[in-house]
Image 1 (spheres, rainbow, N blue to C red):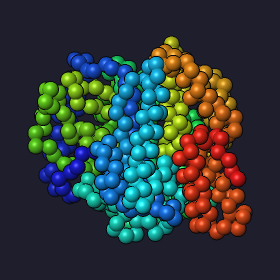
Image 2 (image 1 turned 180 degrees about the vertical axis):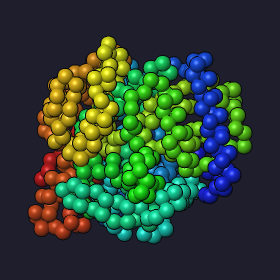
Image 3 (image 1 turned 60 degrees about the vertical axis):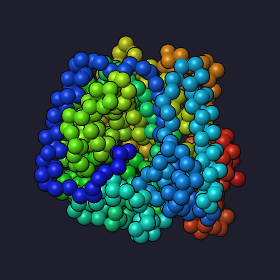
Image 4 (image 1 turned 30 degrees about the vertical axis):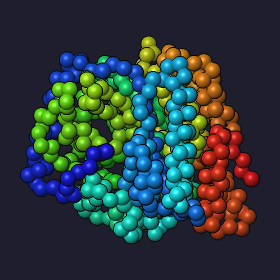
Length: 489
């Protein structure tokens, strides 16, 4: 989805040809996997989506102006005109790799924050910007310019055949119809990448699915959308509903949503790409000039297959990347919200990288003892309730997710990080932050909810309280102390 499109609309003939190319590319990918000529480096990476606000903490629809000021190709547009995305280059995780990631990320964001100030804006890293109001998306300037954003918006609405329904019930209820996919722009995330050898991909993906629930409980940071207090990680449901191409009748028939947790454990990365082609019509069926195009190093580009994969929004997405001397595979972990701070973000990453490693290499796979439906139910429970959730875990039964994380998963993540060669001091530092988050039961979501309640109790109306809360959030975010230490007063 990072590549610009040439057109915003597509013919029936283009759709037919695109489907044929997807089948051809599946065969090519299968042949590549059988030959096994892939890059086997172990690297990690990160993408971070960010919000831009003005002096009143409202969304600032000026991302092009801000990007001109930042003047760095690592920062790019996102679909919302108040969003930008930062792409951190891949790096090794062993020794002090996580420290390098933290220091580099902090330096880049500090520089971007300084440059954004020249455009009278401020950067806020949060899963959903709390000051987004119901008027957002009602004017044409909500969307970034470019054919791919316009095409995504029009094709989702065309496939759905009607306005987008947002209907979410939490402590408060939100229900409205949107005339475009602007609610999708509200959802800003951090996406963790880990490069995986082909023979290890299935176990890595299965492990990532198992831990999705505790991941989102620890990192929840999106409790407010359109001025309503909803789920602890409302972004999960907002994103699903915002780009749902199914009319209500298709939902009733069991048609799968494009934002998808999945429905089964896998035995190969091919299972996921085959599901993409089998279950999901092409959303952006733009044809490349050459279906069999090779990169400069002779690697099959598989342009259509990769573009189609970018429009199936799995929370753990498979990536085929043809860049370099040899192609490589990555797992893209997409379920975490942005923020609150750089050190919180890297600590969340340490938990994911270490835990996936430990589970992937375990003698008895955890997913062999857990129904896939249980992993999915755990995930939604933790998105709704965050650190207050209760989950089911093999061998332990039902238990509070904070107990699961603190007593069982953090030690396991430490084992995985040691196996990856991470320095012991850094293991203790990053996982110690997460343990303290469990003890205090304060993540970004719980802090936002409590701070908002205090401001309203002091007499502020909801819109004013939200602006004041975001101003406090932005100050604490820039100070950089972990969110479990943030004061409420």
